[in-house]
Image (cartoon, rainbow over the protein chains, first blue to last red):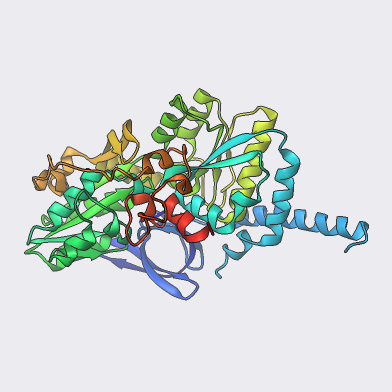
Length: 86
Length: 362
């Protein structure tokens, strides 16, 4: 139930008065309710729990985390080179 | 593997973050990861084996299936056995042992029990079967409450009188408080559940942090998220700080998701709630408001007063409180296995016992 992984929104439609969508998890597509993320647009990634999209993944925040880690990685590589093990 | 997964599980990065943890730590610390999804990521990736010996991770109560009280399972089975009932549930719940049997065996003896992935599928079953009663087993934490609330609201709007939910909703912050207030408490810091905070935001955690003076880092569910969360919390502990920090900024905003929170407030109200294995925790659960009583299965079906019986061997209570590890239970992997579980912690994909069983080579 809480093991939600990010999926990409590939379709938006309406059903029984609710804003719905299709989310693609690397080829597996499931229907989700978008009522709690009405501002979402196609191509954005979302976290879904029990059929309801609960957040739109903030790409900038994700990038910040990954950049920080990348920086760690390049520092480590540099260290290796200096020590002649690179 | 999909975008936003591989990059957050990359092992080269993991090694570097682990190095940073080793540099940081000067003395022993006990940290609880609250969410069962985090427990699984930790055990699956072996993080618990790779940490320096000073850092002890204890697994929290954040498994919704595991803490659903026995009487709810028994009530679910009793309702499912009514011939006019279509009983809908998340798949995880079907093997959870009740006092006598589980929902799967109820199905084998003729009950119409159906697995759904969303409460909206149960709602659809109610539309398609107007002559039958459709009951949805609405369990979970703050992550499933918005969906269940929406299903009730939608049923009310459409006048679907044959739809109701059997509710067992638990709230994470009261359990975190109860653990800290316990005389047996060993926990010095929390990795808080990223997806619960995605809905609820950070405010409740700031209160806990101030009251109990423990650092809380809201953390994502991938292995490198957890390692980074550990760096953040260990930095606080080593420096004697206690603050709420957010490692999972890509999903968690300060205010959470106000639309989802609003719908939960509209349909549910807070009540004292029993947690399986832990007991009654004040103000730690949700119940359907009187206004929506027509959609409350506990009021529609006379199911109170069923006598319950727990397995005498199962120690899931102390495991859920982080006081013992699954492999310290004498029944673990002997009389208790995923195909014959004694307790819910061995059933659920978020249960600590199931994580140990599947990923640890014992």
